[in-house]
Length: 89
Image (cartoon, rainbow, N blue to C red; front, side, top):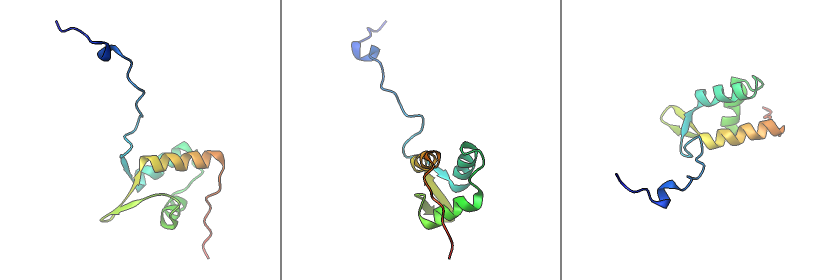
């Protein structure tokens, strides 16, 4: 049997539930936001926010990818009641 060292027994730091580099497709991110906000943010609004730059996003070919951290920040902002409304001219 191997000896256990103090380092092996030391408590591990709390890990985040999501990989900070995790990317979500726009449709998956919209579903998560819709569910977390109780349906108050619709699909059109979500894609308008992407178009206007309110949500950090990247294009990879035809796919729109959103970092999970950006989605988390958006959810926090919505829960605080900060306005993100975009008015078309």
